[in-house]
Length: 104
Picture 1 (cartoon, rainbow, N blue to C red):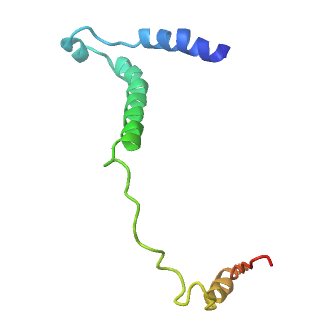
Picture 2 (picture 1 turned 60 degrees about the vertical axis):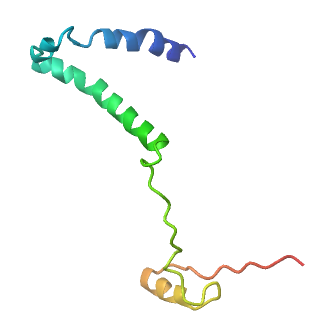
């Protein structure tokens, strides 16, 4: 718990207090190259947080699930149509049909 307390109470406030944030709009135009470089990490972190929040909570931000059924299944599915044999020959894999039996 001590490292988290140090991070929240001391490290982050000290870092933020050293950032070159100007007091006026004209101050933004007087920032040097190193000042702009110092502002990149917190800006990128804020943009990433905003993007993740948008994707998580905005209904239009999440991709909608596709309503299609897997079209790669064999024509005789769920019965064995031998489609796994071609796959086994091409890839050297040993994929076969799954047989599930009910306990009697």
